[in-house]
Image (spheres, rainbow, N blue to C red):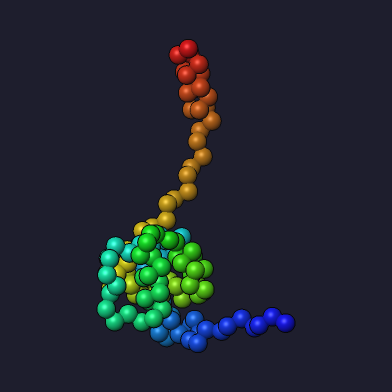
Length: 117
């Protein structure tokens, strides 16, 4: 018989503090978060501290951080927005998708490279 999975003591929706929108605008699921402070900030809530400690070694997207923390992405957005407003984290917009390269340009480049032989 397998043991039932442990439930969180505090439901994930309480991480939002009763707010319906994060204070910082522009967060997406692929927004990159990173911490640049070596010392943990004082007086952080446990969920905020877990996110900050997760990001201390390097950068993660919001969705990756949510998966590591086992929180919904929407709750992780609130936590990250709080830490960005407090100056504990930095957020960077996701890298835009690459545009399709013009095929004729690539063909002309190939012809030019072959002519160099």
